[in-house]
Picture (cartoon, rainbow, N blue to C red):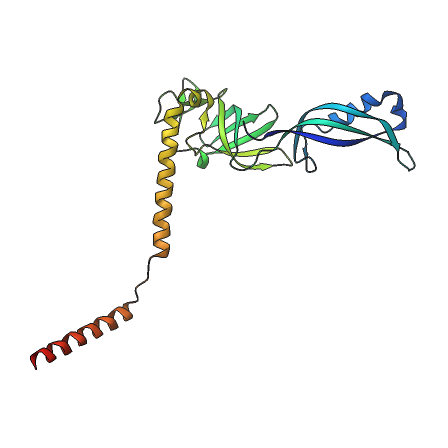
Length: 235
């Protein structure tokens, strides 16, 4: 799955003097406060950390309450989905107009009706809501399905993802992994159709515009030349 990265970071943790005898616990508490929140400085949501080295020298900071700063190096697991990345999550709810997914157990995602490709048809079977593929009988999406989808946008404040199932390489992970050749062929066909449509649009945009008055004038001039040529031949 895309959107995950490991980053080596050099940090400074500020500890209150009352915690001087329990510095390690204070540091871990501060690092834990970063979890599952988006950090602009770190450019991602912190999912996990591993403190590898600690400085034995602490710098006391001036102030009414003189905190001291402890320098440390940590390895951070960050999550930052961006547009056109592929993510995977578990379907927790679906209806005729949307599919709701949980990614990594904490980030919610939604795929609305207009972003679900046409081959998927909404049905209710024995009281269970499901999206069935009209092209591939065994390709189904229902509650509990592990879904692979494309990121359209990511709200960093509420950690909410807007996704898409339009590309052929999205859908049930289980089906996609078992039928790689089928969706690769469909994906190539889709790209060819897209390129063909783009070429047609480019031709429509760039084709020469013929002015009726100019055409008429050119035609008149051509007729005059033809008449003059015939008179010369007759004489």
